[in-house]
Image 1 (cartoon, rainbow, N blue to C red):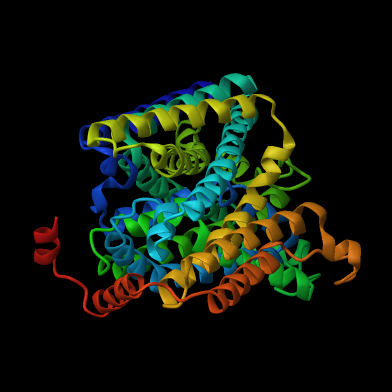
Image 2 (cartoon, rainbow, N blue to C red):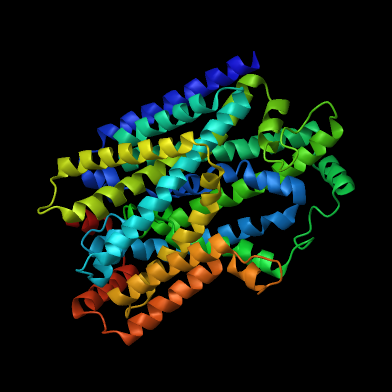
Length: 512
């Protein structure tokens, strides 16, 4: 009977996502709509979709599980992410929205880099497009693997069936709805995630006797839970906080800034986005607290994943709610997985069509050709990702953390310098991108610091050296090579002027 309720809830959820995709399909008329939504996102939609596409299953499974096993010492990553997301919204979002529109209406991050420094060799755009294509294809595959694994563990079903079901539904609404399809579904999925992270720990907390009883029980069985320093090391804390640096270079997140109606919307988006993220992180913390108390008091209830604790949210939901309600709450995990897959599919398709295949065209594609080329790109990337996911290779899952560092190290310094340093030129941008990507890859793959004994037996997250050396390379090479052209610096100055005095809605409408 429980499985029947879960299947009914899942069917309703899938149907709702497809309906939203159909709605977005009807509002998608050309390539600009398909890849960037025509730059007409409101702050609520942008903030919710950015959060949902960012957090994935880590927020509902990884973070509560780590907290359940080790306590608040595991929250340093969440703290780093909160700080990084806040800085991203406050300082990156408004400038990026203005600059991408000024820089020849750039609709992808690689095209923005090229137009920002006037790189007529196209080397920078191709390099950035390749980084996006390679990393995100594997990133999408890892999400499909997670979807198949979720289906297998929650329903006791076949991994391949679950993987193809999750991939198929996500592909359907992304293929036809494009950026708007991914964004609208992300918004709904973000609301589902938030509601679930409030309801599950709240009901579980009262199931153990209320807040006081919950904290008393946790203090008895895990007295070090509330300590931020228990078993922590300096290198470990720095590595965890460094995750926040990755936000500046994540294409599937910052593309939402580019799609805002106006740079003025970034202020409202900051409040909504950071508010959502803070509530979700607190929900994850209380999920761990309630889980510890609940499974201590209910000896007949068992945690499925006793090694990592990553099923604490799923197990609690099934323990304290009726199966019909639990089915919808369990869909929150699937929502987190699918929201990330859909966003990454659109960005990867944009890199394939706009930044790699598109630059070889002898003449620009028409609006309709761009639209269908984007859909073809989504289909191609999804098929390759599904083929990779069929192997269920653990290395694909491990690439998720590695890809975050790779994008953060390769793109993060360039985004910051593009928006805040007038002197950046094409040689410096290319040097920074390549240096960040290579250092992050080599440092993460071979763990040179542990081999050389730089920090004893501790490994420093590759984001730190990758980001810092990429930033340094871009600055040094820009300074020792010719200054950018007057056209480039004039556009930068215009961005600053617009940033200080944002355009009114009437001016934006007139420009459109």
